Amino acid sequence: MNRTTPFLAVTAALVAGVALTSCTAKDSSTSSSASSSGDKAAPAEVTVAATDTECALSGTEGATGANTFTITNNGTKVQEFYVYDEGDRVMGEVENISPGLSRKLIVQLTEPGTYTTACKPGMIGDGIRGDFKVTGDAVQIDTEGKFKEAADSYKRYVNSQTEALVTATQVFTDAVKAGDVNAAKAQYPIARTYYERIEPVAESFPDDLDPRIDLREADLEPGQKWTGFHAIEKQLWVTGLQPDANALADQLVADIKELNDGVKAPDWTIDSTQIAGGAQGLLDEVASSKISGEEDIFSHTDLWDFQANVDGSQTAVASVRPILDERDAELGKRVDQRFADVEAALAKFRQGDGFVLYDTVTEPQRKGLSDVVDALSKEVSQVQGVIAPQ
Image 1 (cartoon, rainbow, N blue to C red):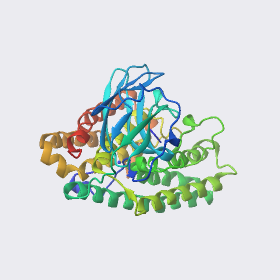
Image 2: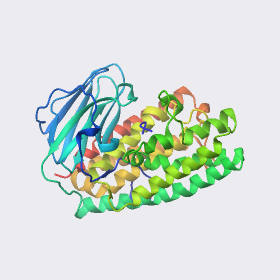
Image 3: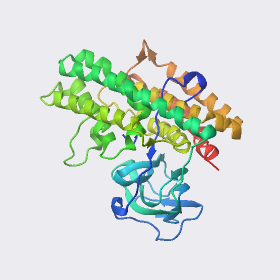
Image 4: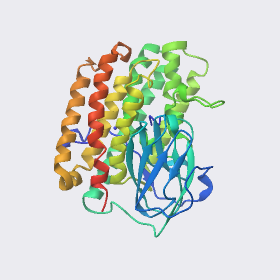
């Protein structure tokens, strides 16, 4: 989670993931103490100066529609920046901002009200939060033409992925409850593939849905209950099945079904700007946890997740590709080439229908994977700005 998959025409039926939104009323109750720069009106582009202890925005007010944030990490820790709706629903995010670097985030805030911004030094915890007030009339976006086609296509894809996730998770948890450890181990990376393609979707829902499904042990806070894939992963590969294994399995199935029901709700929406931002976010997931081996630390099945994130990013780009080709066809071609480079790099580690275990991948090999992902990320990071509604 928060580490949190898109589409050439030939891959449109394959994979995906991205942060999503729904149009709901806002209030100020979601905000917490902040380190902002005061209640001054935001310029067309809000700059965010992030340090290890501060999150200073050049403005804390905006208008309904597209809001642009440029985040510069002036601290010593890797940063994340989030814009939340009520219930910590993620409206937009950018992760893996290394010290000294800047990243841009465009967020469509379609309803007036008070949102929450957060810088997360070290990419952990609730972050340094502040209010961001949005005024103006409610707006509708992606309601016609290529923008509507992109949003509708991607929503259909997410629906298909969550349906497959429900089925694959049931197979996985049935094996756990039957005590068939070998079968559960074999199914674990398969079920996770569907989730990793669309993981940011879960972050768009309140009630901590993503942590319930995908929280890592290293990210547990004192007193927090650990559930989800990784809690079961540890039992399968390290401790052996424990007395709470069946309960964990049942909870995982219930949480996955909650996600599936959520994305099928009539009021669940997604816009092209968020789709493009999600394409970048999925690559950030690879850079921040898959490359290091932190994601599947017990099973070492990280390369399955790696592939799912990359596939999802490619599908997200493909959904907005008609807009991208119209505005910057050369960028589209560069993105294609970088995706091909990553696919070629990953192919070296394939074994049968899956991949070698990640603890067999050497540090120089990991560095090679990191390099091609960084090159891809550099190109994909430009897509959101190009395709944002004008």
